[in-house]
Length: 155
Image 1 (cartoon, one colour):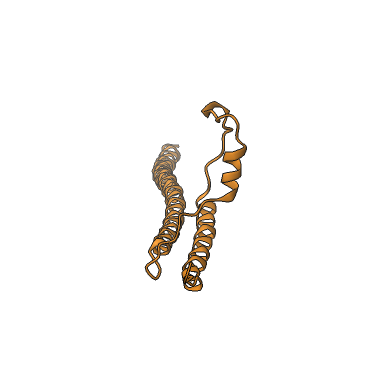
Image 2 (cartoon, rainbow, N blue to C red; image 1 turned 30 degrees about the vertical axis):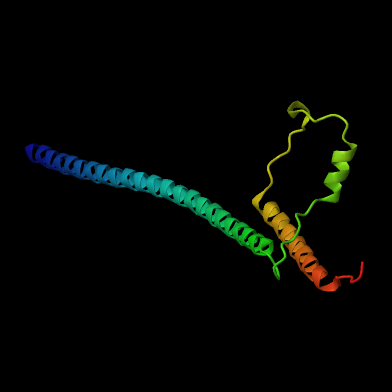
């Protein structure tokens, strides 16, 4: 019987040792799992930050492109304002604005002006391109007028 009790105690010790080894293994696996979860969370936040930076970079690239186009348009406008053949073109007055000024009876107060949303950069560039083309065409036609006028003699 003492032998049987000793064998049972040895088996019990073996089982307790196995249980401790398994518990240590589980603790190691849990620690590795928690580290992996933490690392994944950090990587996800870095990915989100990277996406945000990509969007910001794209916005800045678009804005840079729009500003370059706007600068080119302004440079073209400045080139068109230079005198051609010694003649400087007369300032351009929009006939629609003249009509508005002539028909306007009371001055518009700031309170009465309806709110208008700001123009997008693409719309601004397109408008500037149209205006610069018109200015260029008017400049070409006004520069050719003096060559067509012949001075009258005797009057």
